[in-house]
Image (cartoon, rainbow, N blue to C red; front, top):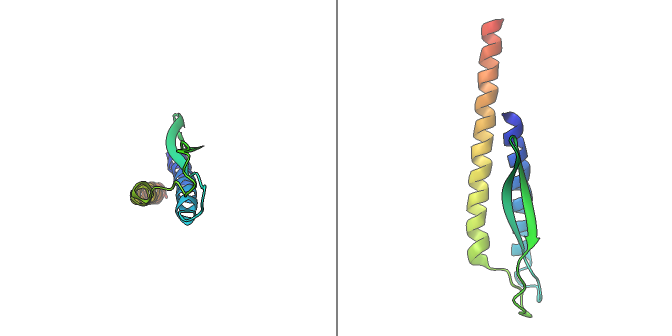
Length: 101
């Protein structure tokens, strides 16, 4: 189960990297942002799929802050949930080892 949370953390990190790059280039003329989606690739694996957003032909940056900033809230919540799950699993494993000893 911890492997699922770890792969999810890695996917969220990739999403955050792409999100930060999009925001950093909000004033870069001709910049086309990346869109990231999270996918369950196997039963115990989460991955980030990144694609370029559709080019609308604008010579200005196409980064939409009304999309990017709420995404940061979702990413932060994803990190928090996965870290809490890993901590809980770690505590449960520690308790089981203490009971066995």
